[in-house]
Amino acid sequence: RRRVARIATRLGFVPNAAARGLVTRRSSVVALILGLSPNPFYLEMIPVISMRLAARGMGLMIFRMGDTDRIEDTLDALARHDVGGCLVAAASLTREAARLCSRFNIPIVMINRLAEVQASSVNCDNRDAG
Image (cartoon, rainbow, N blue to C red; front, side, top):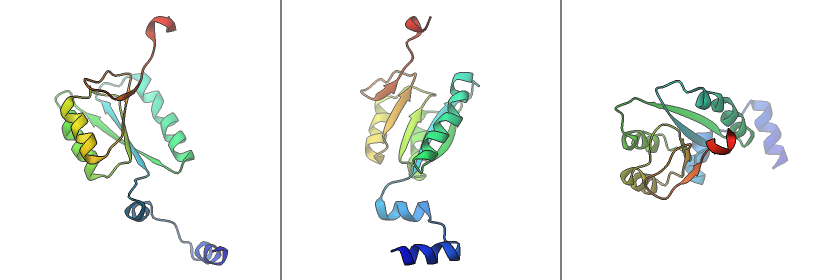
């Protein structure tokens, strides 16, 4: 194994995450869905999320939703990109969206959002925050 690793390094081999995903059936990319409004709270989260994912050998893909976009359409795009998970900071999670997440096997975490269905979420406590 060490010999192969030395030869791979000498030849400049770089592992292909997409090819690894075909074998492991898991993606190393997490999607972040944002809205069009430039909310500083969400914009400041991007580099933090990106660094935390990179430390785990993962990447971040950002999707921006317009005011008239449906989250279901965005989730369909996520499935085409074969993301390993999704952070939602732009919309509510409808029953149809939850069904799509289940069908596409995309774990979802809502950020400062409430879901119409049972879903993981991270929220601020505005009352205790002052």
